[in-house]
Image (cartoon, rainbow, N blue to C red; front, side, top):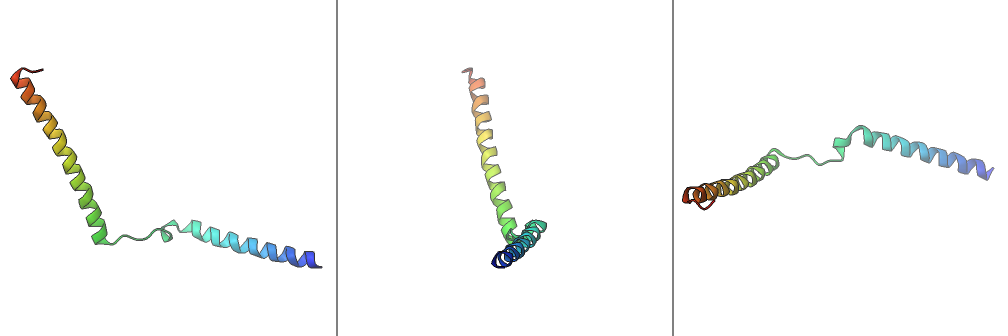
Length: 74
């Protein structure tokens, strides 16, 4: 009789775990924190600033190359 009770408990536990797992998989956005509009804006500004720095570096490299070409160093 003890084996039957243990089997029933294990079965119920498995079913409960399956249901909670299915619920978590059904709504993945629930696990991720939502971003406020101001946080989103700050993140986008950081990205734009990084892009601007990269663009400035490339522009400087182009200008250096053009200057060397004009001076006949290449």
